[in-house]
Image 1: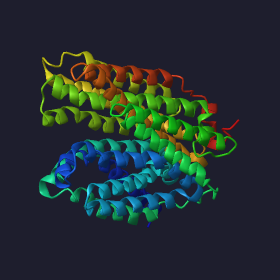
Image 2: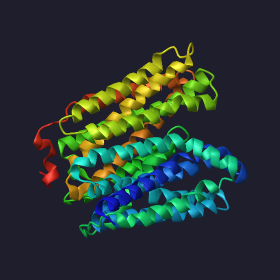
Image 3: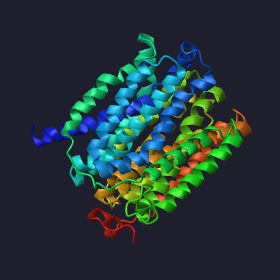
Amino acid sequence: MTPSSRSAVAIASVLSALMLVVLDASIVNVALPTLARDLRASPASVVMVVTAYQAGLIMALLPCAALGESLGLRRVFIGGVALFTATSGLCAVAPNLACLVMARLGQGLGAAAVMSLGVALMRTIVPAHRLGAAIGWNALVVALTSAAGPSVGALVLSLASWPWLFAVNLPLGLLALAMAGAIPHAPGSARRLDRMNLALSMCGFGLLIIGAEMTVKAPAIAVAASAGAILGLTTLIRREASHAAPLLALDLLRAPSFRRSVIASVCCFVGQGAGLVALPFYLQHGLGLSPLETGLYITPWPLMAGVSATLAGRMAKPSTTALLCATGCAFLSAGLFMASVWPLAEAPATIIPIVMLCGLGFGLFQVTNNHNMFLSAPATRSGAAGGLQSMARLTGQTAGVVVVTLLFSRLGPESAPRVGLAIGAILTLAAGLLSTLHKTEREAYAPIAGADLRQ
């Protein structure tokens, strides 16, 4: 196999695994009513099929990133894909809801290795000057797969029973594993990981998810879970204060450029998460559109994000980071604000150019900001950078959902979606303003050469 063909196979392995884990995050949503009926479960309890996957994902992101740096990126990535594939088989044969929820938790744990190490692996496969393009491919796969998820789920259910939603992962997962042998082998640091710190990280972020889920349903449980999460994560930070490469990568956050990228990412994803939750409610309850019409009107968002992500990957350079990030946030903020105030009832189709503007802005920001984030971290800390990047995305999206949920509980279905869209616009604009502070001098990118970020 020639070096170029080997690289192509390695890239295909990473992107196909990423497609699998992203697809599994959205393909199940349309099957929840079917699962409730076939498993004789209540609608409220069957939502745990979705929550368990998200919980496993968030709990394992940072541990998987640390394991990747210690044991080797390829080794942990292959282990994650293998776990995801095996638990997909368990999902397909689950006899009841409890077994399905446990298998979905295992899927989330495996998916965490793919999501946290995907871009870090790309950094070992492609030359440095093509890293922006590789991040663009990553974003394109995520956008297109997210857009296709509900449709693929509906197609599978129209042809077969719900277990096939998970059974289809088996051949694709095995193919990704077969191609993973082409990924370059980069030995890990062999750094010994503290098991107590791994447990504190997983419990802390797990409790955060529980707190977020229970914010409206059971406020007392939400407060207790959040307090436990704060206690656990505070203890983790204290235990790792003197570590050169901590699990919760505070060493990377000491670099101003990296820190700004993470904060901007959280703000932008809160806005995006709030927008993508509020918009369907607005279109269906506020404008009376059918679920099919709503899906068709929103689909241009991820499709446009995929197109702009590819373009941003080619344009992303240290000298263009601030401009592209700020422009992307400005477009997304404008789109969310227009969706909130525009008289859509008179012509619902006018939402199409609005969501296209949102997708254009989101793709520009996401790829460029991620590019800046990875270039602001030493190559030896790529796993930790990937873990924080994925954590920022999931934390922001979860917070966006919580914001809209709280708005519904206070304002009702008439006003909450439009207020949620407006809040999303404000937070996205804040991310854009923060992005204008990105430096273009060489010293902002000094960590590429391995500068000590602890200083």
